[in-house]
Image (cartoon, rainbow, N blue to C red):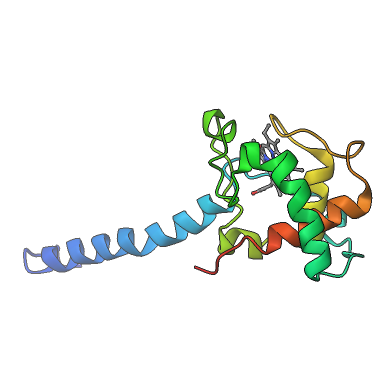
Length: 145
Ligand code: HEC
């Protein structure tokens, strides 16, 4: 094998740089998924949403969201609520279309039911239908970026 001559070096550097720059967008997608990598058990992800996602359901969800969730998750869902701003780790961005597309209804429902860290469990506080209304409302927050 011939040693790599000086002629190949620029090409090698370019290849390395291209590699780095091509990887960055993928890292951002993985990172965007959830700051803590919180995922629901497979069984819960498969649970079907029994509440039709229509205007009535979304507006019922919106009322609950503004009352109970916006303080942390922000009025738009971007995670900049009064209390949310102070929390560590940073709150997930519920308007992130990439992240939300990966999360089936059953998973969002389970997360609202179970809670994690500073996020309380809403199993007792909200009825099943109220939690599904929230799922439908949260879906409407996501922007497709
Ligand atoms: C006290 C602050 C707080 C309140 C109130 C709160 N949350 Fe959260 N929420 C969090 C935090 C913190 C996380 C991230 C938890 C983690 O991943 O460790 C989270 C995560 C979530 C997630 C999962 C997002 C993801 O990327 O996995 C959903 C969905 C969610 N919250 C919905 C709601 C809804 C709906 C309400 C109101 C009924 C609510 N939250 C109320 C703090 C809060």
